[in-house]
Image (cartoon, rainbow, N blue to C red; front, side, top):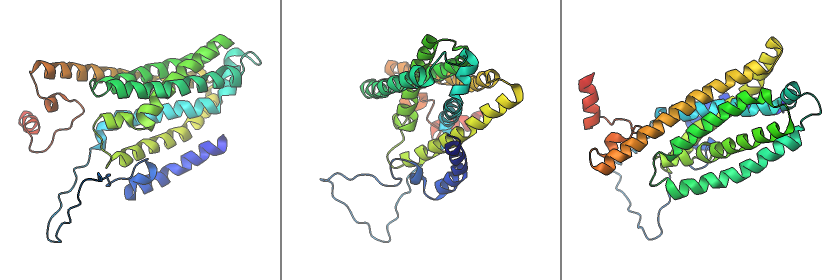
Length: 287
């Protein structure tokens, strides 16, 4: 486990260098290529014809998603690395079995949660644009709760409940962020999904490597894991609040669109202003 955490931390700068030259190396789909239907003819362009560049998605609008990935990886990597010591500190030795009462229920809950979140996104995301943000808000609140709750796992029932709740958050995280369903729902196309997933994978690598060092250093300095667990639970709580507010904004904006008051582009809080658009002109006038 120590070697794995060290390798993840060492791979972070390598991934950053690779991303600048080949973002698809860290993603699941290649950048700049899209499948062409079989019945569609390929038109060859003359050498003197200019090809319009594809407008790239501004990755800055996904800063909250990348930050959430980082802190979730810190919690995931650090807690798993020191799980035996953390449980022994909270419940005492031989009271809770980490493999039986935590990792086994966690794996089961996560394996059920991942397909459930996928089915939920497939069924409702096209009509309910606020669903990805709502699920991320729920994952943020639950992640903060289980992280701060770990020092109070004093018996096997509390350990199983902790594992189940954490498995639910893992299913949401893996489906929406690791697999990219959230980014696809927010309009990232196949041509750019590799670049976005590359940045997200970079945050995962850094967080997984930082987690054990953070929890271990706090344990050496303070003599307990409790303070470090409470501190690491604050960022997911704040991010959960952010995504919950974002979800309510998107839902109210969609309601305004249905009522015929505003256009969808003007009400999408995730859509950045395009230079030359009325929205950008209004912002320039206000400035």
